[in-house]
Image 1 (tube, rainbow, N blue to C red):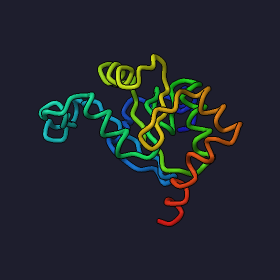
Image 2: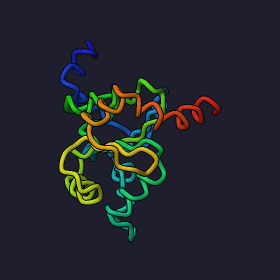
Image 3: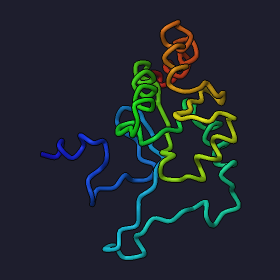
Length: 162
Protein backbone atom coordinates (compact mmCIF):
# COMPACT_ATOMS: atom_id res chain seq x y z
CA UNK A 1 0.00 0.00 0.00
CA UNK A 2 2.83 2.42 0.81
CA UNK A 3 4.35 1.73 -2.60
CA UNK A 4 1.16 3.10 -4.21
CA UNK A 5 2.07 6.51 -2.78
CA UNK A 6 5.48 6.45 -4.43
CA UNK A 7 4.26 5.58 -7.91
CA UNK A 8 4.01 9.30 -8.76
CA UNK A 9 7.48 9.87 -7.28
CA UNK A 10 6.13 12.42 -4.79
CA UNK A 11 6.07 11.82 -1.07
CA UNK A 12 2.58 11.44 0.37
CA UNK A 13 1.16 14.29 2.41
CA UNK A 14 2.54 14.16 5.92
CA UNK A 15 5.84 12.53 4.95
CA UNK A 16 8.81 14.81 4.53
CA UNK A 17 12.38 14.53 3.31
CA UNK A 18 14.87 15.29 6.07
CA UNK A 19 17.66 17.80 5.50
CA UNK A 20 21.12 16.42 4.87
CA UNK A 21 20.55 12.70 5.44
CA UNK A 22 22.71 9.99 3.93
CA UNK A 23 21.09 6.97 2.29
CA UNK A 24 22.74 3.56 2.85
CA UNK A 25 23.87 3.61 -0.79
CA UNK A 26 26.05 6.63 0.02
CA UNK A 27 23.71 9.13 -1.59
CA UNK A 28 23.65 12.40 0.32
CA UNK A 29 20.45 14.40 0.03
CA UNK A 30 20.64 18.13 0.57
CA UNK A 31 17.01 19.05 0.86
CA UNK A 32 14.59 21.04 2.95
CA UNK A 33 11.62 20.10 5.07
CA UNK A 34 8.44 22.13 4.64
CA UNK A 35 6.97 23.68 7.76
CA UNK A 36 4.22 21.63 9.31
CA UNK A 37 1.50 23.76 10.95
CA UNK A 38 0.93 21.02 13.55
CA UNK A 39 4.52 21.17 14.77
CA UNK A 40 5.68 23.59 17.45
CA UNK A 41 7.76 26.40 15.94
CA UNK A 42 10.83 25.30 17.94
CA UNK A 43 10.90 22.21 15.76
CA UNK A 44 10.33 23.94 12.40
CA UNK A 45 13.28 23.78 10.04
CA UNK A 46 15.39 26.86 9.80
CA UNK A 47 17.21 28.17 6.77
CA UNK A 48 20.77 28.59 7.98
CA UNK A 49 21.75 30.52 4.86
CA UNK A 50 18.92 33.00 5.38
CA UNK A 51 20.62 34.48 8.43
CA UNK A 52 24.19 34.09 7.20
CA UNK A 53 26.23 36.13 4.79
CA UNK A 54 26.45 33.20 2.37
CA UNK A 55 24.92 33.86 -1.02
CA UNK A 56 23.41 31.16 -3.19
CA UNK A 57 26.46 31.50 -5.44
CA UNK A 58 28.65 30.72 -2.40
CA UNK A 59 26.51 27.69 -1.57
CA UNK A 60 26.77 26.35 -5.12
CA UNK A 61 30.54 26.92 -5.13
CA UNK A 62 30.87 25.11 -1.79
CA UNK A 63 28.66 22.21 -2.95
CA UNK A 64 30.72 21.73 -6.10
CA UNK A 65 34.03 22.08 -4.24
CA UNK A 66 33.16 19.83 -1.27
CA UNK A 67 31.34 16.99 -3.04
CA UNK A 68 33.20 14.76 -5.52
CA UNK A 69 29.95 14.11 -7.40
CA UNK A 70 27.34 16.87 -7.10
CA UNK A 71 24.02 16.76 -8.94
CA UNK A 72 21.50 19.58 -9.13
CA UNK A 73 18.32 17.88 -10.18
CA UNK A 74 14.55 17.86 -10.14
CA UNK A 75 13.73 15.76 -7.09
CA UNK A 76 16.19 13.74 -5.04
CA UNK A 77 18.16 10.67 -6.15
CA UNK A 78 15.72 8.20 -4.61
CA UNK A 79 12.68 10.06 -5.99
CA UNK A 80 13.63 11.95 -9.17
CA UNK A 81 10.92 14.24 -10.49
CA UNK A 82 11.86 14.00 -14.17
CA UNK A 83 13.18 11.38 -16.54
CA UNK A 84 16.40 13.24 -17.30
CA UNK A 85 17.30 13.49 -13.61
CA UNK A 86 16.40 9.82 -13.15
CA UNK A 87 18.66 8.83 -16.07
CA UNK A 88 21.65 10.80 -14.74
CA UNK A 89 21.29 9.23 -11.29
CA UNK A 90 20.81 5.73 -12.73
CA UNK A 91 24.03 6.04 -14.76
CA UNK A 92 26.05 7.52 -11.87
CA UNK A 93 24.88 4.80 -9.49
CA UNK A 94 26.40 2.16 -11.78
CA UNK A 95 29.79 3.33 -10.51
CA UNK A 96 28.91 3.07 -6.81
CA UNK A 97 30.28 6.53 -6.04
CA UNK A 98 28.94 8.73 -3.26
CA UNK A 99 26.46 11.22 -4.71
CA UNK A 100 25.39 14.55 -3.30
CA UNK A 101 22.31 16.25 -4.69
CA UNK A 102 20.09 19.28 -4.29
CA UNK A 103 16.49 19.49 -5.40
CA UNK A 104 16.19 22.62 -7.52
CA UNK A 105 12.38 22.40 -7.58
CA UNK A 106 12.27 23.47 -3.92
CA UNK A 107 14.17 26.69 -4.49
CA UNK A 108 13.80 28.70 -7.72
CA UNK A 109 16.56 31.07 -6.60
CA UNK A 110 18.96 28.14 -6.23
CA UNK A 111 17.96 26.96 -9.70
CA UNK A 112 18.87 30.37 -11.12
CA UNK A 113 22.15 30.46 -9.16
CA UNK A 114 23.18 27.05 -10.54
CA UNK A 115 22.32 28.12 -14.10
CA UNK A 116 24.42 31.24 -13.65
CA UNK A 117 27.31 29.30 -12.09
CA UNK A 118 27.54 26.72 -14.87
CA UNK A 119 26.30 28.91 -17.70
CA UNK A 120 24.03 25.99 -18.66
CA UNK A 121 20.24 26.34 -18.92
CA UNK A 122 18.89 22.83 -18.28
CA UNK A 123 18.77 20.27 -15.47
CA UNK A 124 20.07 17.98 -14.18
CA UNK A 125 23.53 19.46 -13.89
CA UNK A 126 26.32 17.09 -12.90
CA UNK A 127 29.66 18.19 -11.45
CA UNK A 128 32.55 15.77 -10.94
CA UNK A 129 35.56 16.82 -8.85
CA UNK A 130 34.57 20.47 -9.16
CA UNK A 131 34.13 20.42 -12.93
CA UNK A 132 30.81 20.88 -14.71
CA UNK A 133 30.18 17.76 -16.81
CA UNK A 134 26.73 18.44 -18.25
CA UNK A 135 23.28 16.92 -18.17
CA UNK A 136 21.94 13.40 -18.49
CA UNK A 137 22.67 13.14 -22.22
CA UNK A 138 26.33 13.99 -21.70
CA UNK A 139 26.62 11.71 -18.65
CA UNK A 140 25.11 8.85 -20.69
CA UNK A 141 27.46 9.54 -23.61
CA UNK A 142 30.51 9.63 -21.29
CA UNK A 143 29.36 6.33 -19.77
CA UNK A 144 28.90 4.71 -23.17
CA UNK A 145 32.36 5.72 -24.42
CA UNK A 146 34.15 4.81 -21.16
CA UNK A 147 35.18 8.34 -20.17
CA UNK A 148 32.89 8.47 -17.14
CA UNK A 149 34.54 5.37 -15.68
CA UNK A 150 37.91 7.14 -15.90
CA UNK A 151 36.52 10.31 -14.30
CA UNK A 152 35.01 8.41 -11.38
CA UNK A 153 37.58 5.65 -10.76
CA UNK A 154 39.48 7.44 -7.97
CA UNK A 155 36.21 8.47 -6.28
CA UNK A 156 34.97 4.87 -6.40
CA UNK A 157 38.33 3.60 -5.12
CA UNK A 158 38.31 6.02 -2.17
CA UNK A 159 34.76 4.92 -1.26
CA UNK A 160 35.86 1.28 -1.24
CA UNK A 161 38.86 2.17 0.95
CA UNK A 162 36.52 3.71 3.54
